[in-house]
Length: 138
Image (tube, one colour):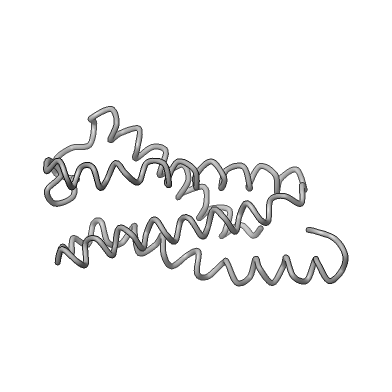
């Protein structure tokens, strides 16, 4: 796990946990809220991401911890976390695109959630395959 992947995952995973803490505590200023933040259906849509974001964050942080301990289980957990991260970003972007809502403040972070996993997942799969052919796991 390179430094850029580790940093991207830490920013994302800790960022999700902080974001959801702010939302659940009602501390998100309306100036930073997404369009129709107070609409119950849109609010329910947003809150429906909590399980996904929580799971991907915990798996991602666990993956980093296992990597630091040189435990081979880091790799599959990392790939799962990145796949879930991609899904979270894609779902949000798809929703806003269907609504015609192009708020750059919400698109940039969610495009990040789509792009960085696409960069790292193929590399990680290659590492796993190469390790498998050598008879071990890195």
